[in-house]
Every structure is written in structure tokens, then in C-alpha cells.
Image (cartoon, rainbow, N blue to C red; front, side, top):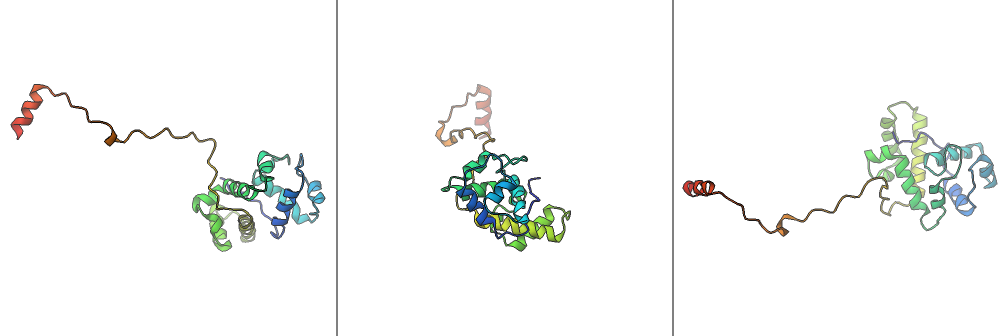
Length: 182
């Protein structure tokens, strides 16, 4: 199931945190110390590390991944984030391919279904609020990135109308039957 259960207790720092990442040199490891260096010292800000893991920006040890470096390109950063959200919240996008347009309440209801009631109403609400805030920061007007692990379809065959008709070889008996039927 592709649905992160990580969430932020408050989403007011999503934009400032991403902007701080864009303005800083990429660390070898994204850690609490690095967050503090970016001047995000609240214990609530530490949850951002789990969110970056869920989005594929860093691995479980905090080591920065290619998506993190791609995000640093400020001409594409918000599209990179949109791709990361689509991938991380794949189950939500399977339910509604334009999940980023849903209201927070609609997202919450979809998440209740997808988590099969295993999360409290409060947690589902925080997950919905986090997803909505991420979507609000991302840019969605770019075309979705094509999956790289899917093979490209082969060129379509020539349409039948472009293939000249081939005369059918008929034996004498079949042509006699056709003329006797008319």
C-alpha cells in the first residue's frame, strides 16, 4: 500500500522548510542537527524528517537521495514535489486521480477508507492536513512524470485501410458453391 502514515502536527512550516532546503547546500545526511542549522528548532519540526523519508527525498538513515537533489533545481522544485506526492500517496491518487484538488474534508474521508479505520479520527485529520498543505505548495500543472520502469509500447501496427487487399486463393469447388448459392 502506498500511503504514508506520517504527518505533521502543524503545517505552517511546510513552505518555510522547503524554502530553507532550497536555500541551503544539500547535506550528506538530513538530521535533526541539519534542521536546527536551518533554524527549525521546534520538536514539531522533527516530524518533517519522517515526511521527507515518505516522499523519497531521504532514505531511512537520513541520507539524501536523487529526488532531494532534483528538488534543489528551483525551476522544477515544486513539480518534483508533486511527483513525490503522487508516488508517496499512490493509493489516494488511485481513488481520485486529481486528489490534490480535494478539500481537506474530502481527503480525510478518503484516508479513513484507505486506512480501514486503523487510525484515529485525529490522526487521519492530521494526515489529511499534511497532504493538503503539501499539495498546496506543489505545482500540479506540469504533466505527470512517466514511470521509468514501464517498457514503452511498440509502435502501433499499420491501419488495415493502408494494407492493400490480398486476393483470396479459391479452389474451384468453393467458387462453384458460391455461384450456385446466388
